[in-house]
Image 1 (cartoon, rainbow, N blue to C red):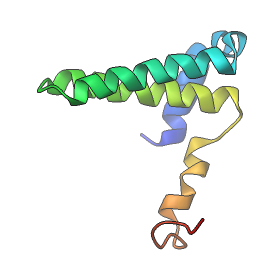
Image 2 (image 1 turned 135 degrees about the horizontal axis):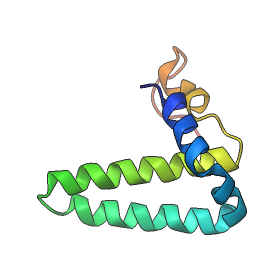
Image 3 (image 1 turned 120 degrees about the vertical axis):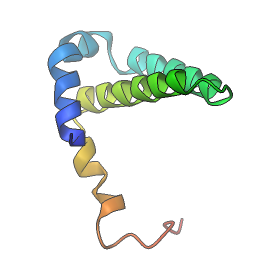
Image 4 (image 1 turned 180 degrees about the vertical axis):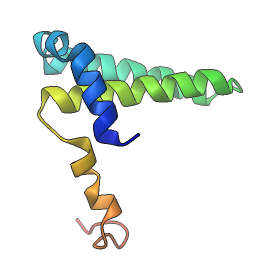
Length: 89
């Protein structure tokens, strides 16, 4: 599955409610999921790690959807030929 396909699935299921919640509250949900992922990473529970990675990715897609960002296009910076390591500041 491509990133855009997953982002579209998340949009179809949740975008109306996500837009009503708004960016600040949605970002807080995302951060909560990142915290749960951090806890899972400290454990030996592979199934929980997988669940939390999926949750973080789904909430990242939600944020992208409500801010009109195409994640697959945004990831081009890492998949194109122009990436040569870290960008200078």
